[in-house]
Image (tube, rainbow, N blue to C red):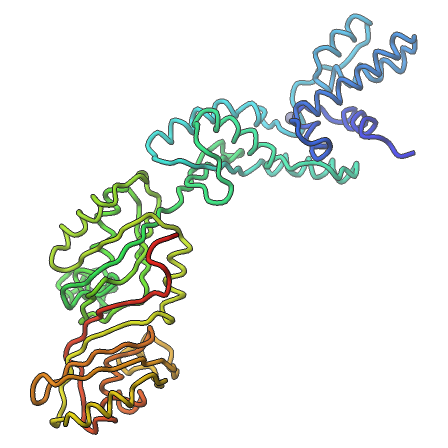
Length: 453
Ligand SMILES: [Zn+2]
Ligand SMILES: [Zn+2]
């Protein structure tokens, strides 16, 4: 007959001093719904009862075997008392083989719980999770025992420690434990006896309008000095002094006491294009925020005050990472509307304008990567859908064009033809060189509902 776990426990205890928690952990998947401490205590109690039975039955040799183990490596008070009373000698052990380096890591829990509570005073959060970096040596010891005694139901030190630590922290902090999307992860390093925090980012969805030309979407450093400051950029380190991202992110960083920000937007307009209409959807990511319960109306007000006349945000709402990813994924599937001023070399007849409108009704066009962005985009031909172009004459050599196109369509090139790299183009169909002199984005349809249901 194979040995039962009681026999195996006795063999292991004969070899190693183990506390209740660590003995129980070796059999953690057996009879769930209790704690490892209870498991360990129960195993030892059964062994003690067996020893006592031998003692009472007069088998002193057998009894000594059990009592010596339990009083020594078992670190069991009641066994020590019984052994003493019966005059059975034993070797006193006080440090557990599987959880003790200088002290037991489980015994550190009350102290580090208080330390974490202290550190977290500065943070606003509703959910948390604990993690730990265990002593490599203790992990090795447990692996060794499990391999040697073929223990298939043990639990790693780390997972048991995290649970016990988490329980204590939950009692103290009175916040929810969230396993999938915690706002803060508390990590305890056993070796360094050190607590660190992983403060997860805060995501805010919104839409921006750009009311002034010459502002890039993201920070654009000087190409000469890469941001250090040189003659070329008057020591500013910047090619453009401001950006849409910074107008949105900087006030938010201040209000949330965050470390950094990132703006994820549904595509981007050219530097010299305005973003009008209902605005462009974006998700603002704030890293390591200390404040999470932001008043978004106040935030919008702060951003709009700082960026007055340049950038304007609205419809701010709390969101999550997946929405930022959706924005990027969707960008080329969005439908966008633009209004452009178009100068022509020759005067164009009304008739030809109508022909051009018909020609561009619901067609696919081919755009090879434009010359002006070739340095940062790979050279390939993109097929884009043009839903509609409406053309109006404003002056003799000036048209106003309204475009409804698939996201990612290069409008300037759709107008100019980009030396034949975009086909067809207005230049081609109107049979005269056309040039975009002003461009505004007037609508972006993201294909997703504006608000989370
Ligand atoms: Zn232990
Ligand atoms: Zn420079």
